[in-house]
Amino acid sequence: MTFFLKLGIFILNILYCMLKLFPVQKKVTFISRQNDVPSVDIHLLSVEIREEHPDYKTVILCRRLKAGFISKLSYCFHMLRQMYHLATSQVLILDSYSIVASVLHHKKKLLIVQMWHSIGTMKKFGYSVLDTVEGSTAKLAKAMKMHANYDFIFAASENYKAHLAEGFNYPLSKIKIFPLPRVELLKDKKYADSVRIGIFNEYPELKNKENILYVPTFRKDEENDLEKALRELSDMIDYKKYNLIVKTHPLTDTKIDDTGALLDRKFNSFDMLFISDYVITDYSCIIYEAAILKKPVFLYAYDYDHYMQTRSIYLDYKKEMPGPINENAAGIIRAISEHDYDLKELENFAAKYVDLKKSHETEDIVGFIFSEKES
Image (spheres, rainbow, N blue to C red):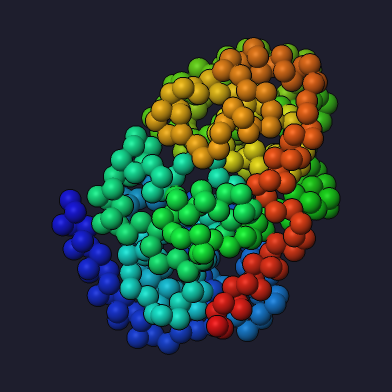
């Protein structure tokens, strides 16, 4: 297997050598495997670049690597497109692992920035989980040069630089403090109002009751456990008083048709925060956005022992989580109904893990990238 990977990488680099003969353009390329459409962070950065540097163009290449032979073959052709734009760009911005960014030999002047796709870290990832159920093997990570070639990695706070350094296997000096552009939107009343209008137009029934948003983290091959936990949660909801909105990971195929919950596929979790009154999660990084918005967070850790053994997280979960932790649905709903919540603890958590003193996150990132590009 390793031999064929190395052979494939060798062939890619030969093709890339030919593509590098094309002249470099005034261009910034974004690559993401998180979704098939640009994230709000990529959109905001692209708009800011075009406004501040109108002589530059931006290219956005977003496509998930899906299962199945046809999908993987299609992604190979997509990688050729990525390679052309890498060979002719001055800057590459990533929000996830990119094969071509890591395995190819780039021109020295190509600046590669990894901004990652979550405001803060929670679950261990990358080099922190090698040779575990949730992670890659060390052998595969070495063959695929996992997370190689980054010039800088962005973190939202000094307090989790060490987490990113470990996960990406980089020195602390490569980690720079720049919260993601979406933090601006969390502080933008006009954006919040427009999002609420859009969601209520689609789901007018959400206007009349308090909304509980449940955002479970992605678990590999454990959908049955998640569905069972979700049904237990739904059974505890008083639907005369609350709406339960469920936002599962796009790769999760959970079905809840026979419950009173709303399984939404039209809006993202980020936007759903703006109409929520309470947020239930477990080990998802949605907790950082919820904390910034001062939405009470409740931790439904129904598989706590198993999860900590198979994946684990960077934080001391039981000491640092800013909200009640329960392993059963009854405890979660009881905590919500009692309305006894320490918002100050939530604010302190947000301030610790996200640098909220900045007010122009997008502008700051673009300014940093273009200053480093010229250096």
